[in-house]
Length: 74
Image 1 (tube, rainbow, N blue to C red):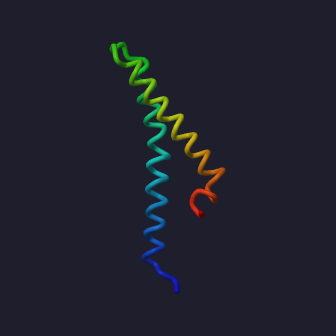
Image 2 (cartoon, rainbow, N blue to C red; image 1 turned 30 degrees about the vertical axis):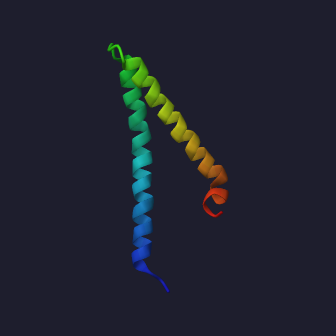
């Protein structure tokens, strides 16, 4: 039987993750670039950490695209 509640939860989950990753990764990248341009003493470490987070998120997305069936189906 068709369950509208389950469908709405699934759609909301996909949209939520899409917004977080779709807007979150560019935001983290922009903060990293802004920290790199700052003249504060700890800005290089903050910038490097934010860039590493961006790279890890991108690699995680590639892994999910390539190996998604093996990861989620079992």
